[in-house]
Length: 117
Image (tube, rainbow, N blue to C red):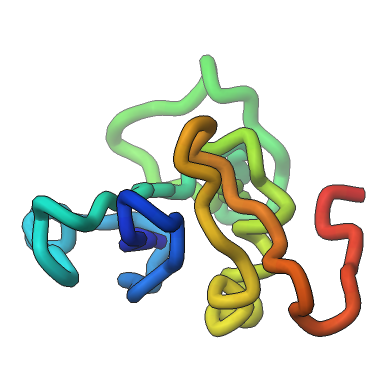
């Protein structure tokens, strides 16, 4: 997911939904580049399986074979992005903390849920 937000307020103004972003996505922008910023979170494989479903150690992967994998968001806020993967509109329940660049739940949003549990 790519999240575009206002630099001064942290208000999210738009997104590009997805787990892996090609070069074309990375060239996209929403809003005025002088007034907006973005957070880019790609998903990375962390567990690999052969075609029969048997788990394979990453060091044993061979280039000429096809594997399946489990993916997770490549960010410290994994649980929030897993939730966005299921319900992308939930991103608008958050703002970006300007200093830390972390997502924080908006005051007054639907009941506060512990997405980090």
